[in-house]
Amino acid sequence: MTAGGSGPTLVLVIAVGVLVASGVTLLLERSLTRILLGVILLGNGVNLLILLGGRSGGAPVIGTGPVDRMSDPLAQAMVLTSIVITFGLTAFLLAVSYRSWYLTGDDEVPDDLEDLQIIRRAERDEVATTDLGGEGPDADPEQVDPEPARRRLRRGEGVE
Image (cartoon, rainbow, N blue to C red):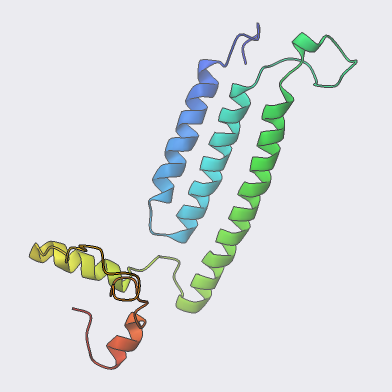
């Protein structure tokens, strides 16, 4: 914050922008390690942004100074909550990343069978069948849970 308490400095605003931009860029990668780092950077950028939204000043304890010169305790409470949520998400992503590395020896996220089907349709310029609606939940084949794709592949039915 600036010395007069009028608002955030340009350096802090640029730091928020760099942290959030770096975090989003890393989230778009296919490696779970980079996704984890992206979540951490994005969380820190958002925490700094929330703190910049609050009023700067003294400690928000009644009796230590005038009320109009205290910092905003709501922003601080929101950042503490956000830190806990980011920590929990980081622990979950670490567990998923470790499990993926343990099972496959790699932490890269593979393509789904459905993603491959969409890519094949896009290459052939196929349009998916249109759902005209009005069938009801039991008669609509799109609403019925299909058998998992891997079982269909094992039987030799194919995914085309």
